[in-house]
Image 1: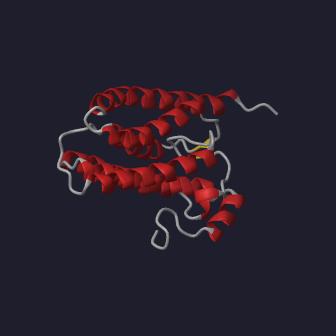
Image 2: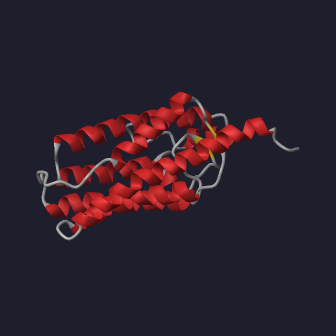
Length: 207
């Protein structure tokens, strides 16, 4: 049976708007980091982490989306903050090898999570299928864990109060996104069963 047109028009419009928003944010981010690579080649790790998310958002498959104003607000803020970061001559709080290692660990975790997600990825909470393999055996939202690890590495490599502000805001909103996503996902019996097996959302043994 065909879906009523009114029930599909809004989600489809929001889907395209979400993709446009991310694409517009990504352009100045790419330009700024490309200009910094000759001095800080390790920054390619944070750029790759954020841009992989952009690529998957632009090519994702559709699914049941949460279309409340709150869901969109927290998703957009959580996505926008990391893409607002710019490379600066900030303070190096730790040796380069340590910050680079953190960024590499986070990126590796992030990539492995995205490989299992494939095109099941987006800004706003959506059910595009339950994933159980790879890093999803450790925590229910390994992609966010990868982001945060990479971002901590970058923050330690180029610390500034503005970067700290952007990242702390992003992390708060990522937690809110997780909570909103799970409201939707727990309606699915398969995800409810999965959450009973993998008990922690973001940090093993803590949350």
